[in-house]
Amino acid sequence: MPSLNNAYIPGKATPNELVPSRYALNIGAIEVLVISDGVLPLPAVTMSTNVEPEDRSAWLEEMFLPPDGFDWPLNVMVARSGEQTILIDAGLGGEFPGFPRAGQVPLRLQAAGIDLSSVTDLVITHMHMDHVGGLLVDGIREQFRPDLRIHVSASEVAFWAAPDFTHTDMPEAVPPVLRSAATRFLNDYREQIRTFEKEYEVAPGVTVCLTGGHTPGHSVVRLASGGDKLTFAGDVVFPVGFDHPDWQNGFEHDPEEAVRVRLGLLREMAETGALLVATHMPFPSVGRVAINGDAFRWVPVFWDY
Image 1 (tube, helix red, strand yellow):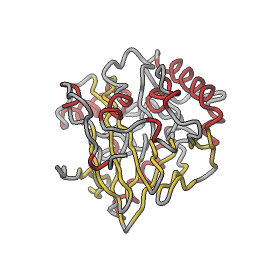
Image 2 (cartoon, rainbow, N blue to C red):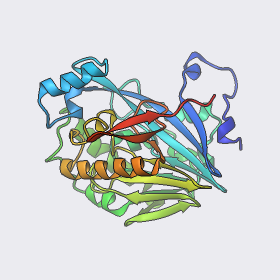
Image 3 (tube, rainbow, N blue to C red):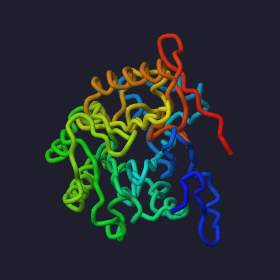
Image 4 (cartoon, helix red, strand yellow):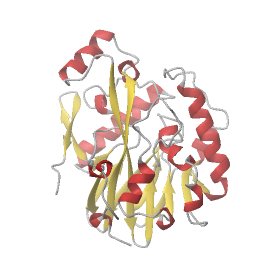
């Protein structure tokens, strides 16, 4: 099995494989690979449902972004600790035709020389379609090993038995697909799912921890080895969340709790200086958090070629 830090493209390269779509680093003895699943084009209002339009427009203009919509990056992560290979989230797959530029994880894992049969553990931060959809692609489930362990919080599993969208503000077509994807995931992988209550050590130095907020069972994954630390934050924070951590996201099932979780995590990251990776931060989504007055500042790492 090749090292994640020497991931390769087998066979003849294609133009799609030449797009920067994976980034390797080490957290102590843990090998890490961040992989882009693509991007999700979404209305700009979705990122800030509790603010005035002029405030949203001002932030978008400052960021040189279009006024009505922008592309949310979509990232997953692979971590190798000891004899275990852990896939963290699985991308969109083909769950939503309105997002044709996402769903690349299966192909990009293959291009990186990572067979699904080598994955021993899979962590699902939460069961939104852009995190479990890659597992629902035809022929994918059969490629995993029979003893695959899928780690997801017990409260997340319970929530999707009867999901509540009362406090969300999503595009109208999205909630039915979220419900369908979560149901299919639970039905297809029920025998492999291992639930936890608050936190669980998946592998040496790799721990999944319940946060709630974005969904009742949303979790983050913390890596620690040799004095190095990295947190995969899932959907706790989006690009606007550093300047405006109190801006609520339309996909948050408990917006007020999501703000509390976001503030807590950003303060912790700023205090510790640990690395942060998040699902919807621009690829490769590896950086640190700094205090910036009453808010925060994202400090991306310099690429290590």
